[in-house]
Image 1 (cartoon, rainbow, N blue to C red):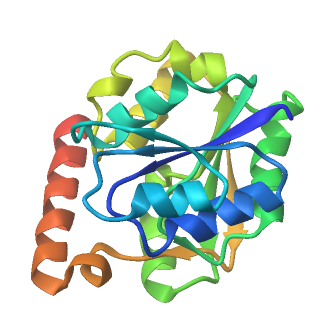
Image 2: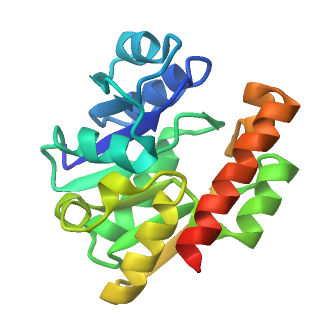
Length: 205
C-alpha cells in the first residue's frame, strides 16, 4: 500500500474506532497518535486495527502528528480527525487520488451534506479542515509541526501557499464530526472552542 492513514487523537474513545475501521476497510495501514488521552482512546483504536503510538504527555495536535509520522513508512499520507461521522472508504481514495497522480501536492476534504453546523463552518473556513492527503516527505520537511496545536491545519495551509503547492479542495459528502460542545458539554466545549479560535487567530496574524 502506498499510503498510511495517520489519526491524532485526544479523548476520542467514542468515535476513533469507527474512523480506524473505515480506513482499514479502504485498505490502508492506520497509525493513531494518542495524545495522552485520559479515556480508552488507545484501547479502542488498537482493537479496531490501528498501530497506536502513545504519548506520555499532551503535545497538541501537531505534536501528536509529528510523533506518529515517525512510524510512517509509505510515500503518501492521509491525515484524518478522530471524531468523524459518516466517513466512507471512497472518501479516502478520492483524497489520495490527485496527490498520487501528481495533480496536486495536497488535497483537503471539505464536509458537504453532513450536518448543517459543520457544513456551515467548512464553507467559511475550508482551509481549517483536518482531512488531508500529501506526500509523507513533504510533511516531514515542514518546520514547526511539533509545536502546532489547534493551528496545525493553518500551518499546513500557509506552508502550501509559501511553497507554491497546488492544493485541491474536495467534497466529502455525508461527512461531519462531533462538535466540542457535544463532547465536553456546552460550557467546557465552548471554552475549548474559544481557545482553539484564539490559537488560530494568533497564528494567522
